[in-house]
Every structure is written in structure tokens, then in C-alpha cells.
Amino acid sequence: MTFVILVSLGVVMIYSSSGIYAQEVMHNSTHFLLRHLMFVVIGSALMLWVMTLDYRLLQKWAKPLLALSIVLLVLVLVPGIGKVSSGARRWFNLGPINFQPSEFVKLVVIVYLADFLTRKQTVLRSFGKAFLPVMLVMAFLCGLIVKQPDLGNTVLIFVITISMLWVAGGRKSHIGAIFLLAIPALVFLVITAPYRLIRVITFLNPWSDPQGAGFQLTQSQIALGSGGLWGVGLGKSAQKLFYLPAAHTDFIFSIIGEDLGFLGAVAVIGLFGFLIWQGTRIMKQTNDPFGYYLIFGVLVMIGIQAVVNFGVSMGALPTKGLPLPFISYGGSALIFNMAGIGLILNISRTQDWGG
Image 1 (tube, helix red, strand yellow):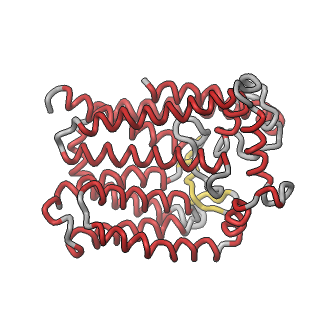
Image 2 (tube, rainbow, N blue to C red; image 1 turned 180 degrees about the vertical axis):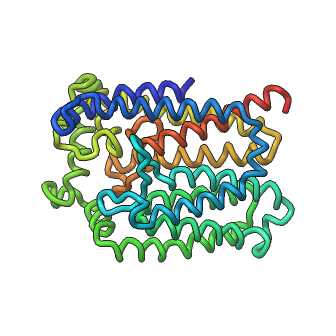
């Protein structure tokens, strides 16, 4: 199974990219590996549990789950409850793990929209009965996530929402209008946060300040370029030796390119492409609208994260903290991406049974 290969590759690359850093900082070269394996186990258990459910029951839980999401997003902003790290308040500290509610919310948004679009199929082109309610819910959730601040997941939820409306048959003029309105909002969010503005300016020419603002992007490009065609060899990356920040998280693809070369990097991109293709095949064979929209939403969620991560690592997109699904270190993202795969497998199994 493609997704198993990606998860397995993630385990290998987490150790390859973080071992030396973990030894130096944590005095334990397996620190991040062991934590990542814990997240894999939790994600696998959640995925298997999701697979055993009748996914149609999620329709009844769509609104309660949405309400729970709102509560979590509010609570994480409360001082003393939400954990602050690097100036962001995005996590709950749950003993050995940190829980990021925005990762849970992405999946809940997909469930809520799948239910809404299924129930409103006859009025999806209506502004007041379909488009406006969806936009209000999305705007409220995105507003809470921006406050953390987390622009990456905010934009991702927006794209998921618009994509699901589009595939369900929403009016194109409505979708086009909200895209136009989103552009000045995005520009405002960038120019009013100096660190975001610096990221955009740096993206345009990272080599103008390779030792300052452009350090991470230039080191990422050096890693990818150093790999050549075949790579320097698994575990032999030089950029992970305190040159490339976030080597085991957002920039793990760069280490893959250095260790395994151009061919290894292309193979990883190909695996994601094949995963999306497999999911699309299942989606097309699904007769149930709710299941159809669920699969589509999960594929958009995973696909957009992968494309953005690839683009950032290669310098084709401004730096944005979206991990590479199934491969990057990061507990909440891995766990809920695996839950999304569980949903797809659940729907596929139901269809095989003639459901």
C-alpha cells in the first residue's frame, strides 16, 4: 500500500535527519524517532478504529464535531491552557504529546462539509441557503486559527472548503467572488505581520541574504542540489548537521533530496501522485454522495499539503509551515492524516461490499 511506504519512509528519514541534532541537543539520538514511532502507533490505532465504523454515522456527528472544534480553538487561545511555542499558541500539552486542534479541525471541516453538501444538493447554487452558511462557518474557524497565529492551516481550510463547494456544483460566480475577496485579506495578513512579509520578500530572492533571512531557503536548495542524481547516500546528508533548520519537520523533503538524490525525490513525489490517483479511483466508484465528498476532501487536504511542502523546499513557494504528510515529524498532523486515510479505506471497503 502506497501510504504504508510513505509512513515507513518517514520513519527512516526522521532518524536520518534528526539523529545528530537529537544527540547534540537531547543527548539521545533516537529522541525524535521514538516520539515519531509513538505518533505512528497512535495514528494507526485511530485509523483502524475509523475503518471499523460505519462512516455514514459521521453525518449525525458532523455538527457536534464542529461545535467541539470551535470550543477547542477557543480554549487553545486562553493563556494557561494553550501552550506557547515560538510565539504561537497552537497546542494543548497532553503529557508526552502536544495536541494541535487545527489539525483535528481540518478533518472535521471535511466531515461537516460532506454532510452539508449532501443535505443541500438541491440548493447548492443558492447564495443564502448554501454558499453563505458555508462561508460564515469557514470564516469563523479561520479567524480563530489566524489568531494562533497559523496562516498555513487557515489557507488550507479555505482551499478545502472552496474545492468541495466547486466539486459539489456550487455556483462558479460565488466561488470566483470569494477568491477575489480572499486576495486582499491574504495581502493584509502578510503585510501586517513582519515575519510573514520577510518570508515573501526572501522567497523572491533568498540568495540576496543567504546568511540572514534567506538562510533556510538557501540551505534547502543547497541540500537538494547536493544530492545530484543518485544522492550522497542514506544518512550521509551534510545539511542536517545544523545547517538546515527544521530538517526533520517542514524541510525533510530537502534531506530526502540530498540523501536519495533527484531520483529519490521524484520517487516520493510519484508516491504522492499515485496515492491521490488511488483515492480518486475509489472516489469515482463511490455511489454515496457523503462518501464521495469525504474522499475528495481528504485527498485535497493531503495533496495540497504535499504540493506546498515540495514547493517551499524547492523555493517555488514562500516558506509556510505545512509538514509533508506521513513523512515529516509532527504528531497531530500525522495522526489526523492517517485518520483521513482510514476514512478512505472505510468507504472503499463499504463499496466493495455493495454498500
